[in-house]
Image (cartoon, rainbow, N blue to C red):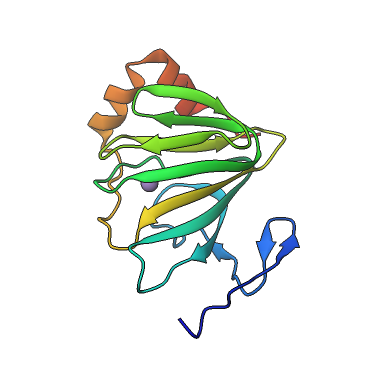
Length: 153
Ligand code: MN
């Protein structure tokens, strides 16, 4: 691919040469807080793409599920994630696999950002957001209820 540089240096602070910094999702399309997205690898002759997301201290990703899967590696900071009914603390170099239709959310610690790589299919279904019923069902587990209500700051 002639238009894709072979080498792009990291510029410090988890930025890379020629990689634009974007909002995580379009504002208002889904609930989330304080996240940026960089697409590190995406090319037409590859079925997957690799993104870097960074959640600011106290921020969180959208609680969602979908048919496509995610492979995640934490690169920076600390936080917690919900995957299915499982809540884990996460730190750099931890790996997280998210199966089809598992509810998932990433939350940064109040005092540290949470940065992670996420590998995903380029062609993928649209994320589903929880209905009121889904939220009630999730919150029937007290641990999940506390996770979802946990305060950012
Ligand atoms: Mn997702």
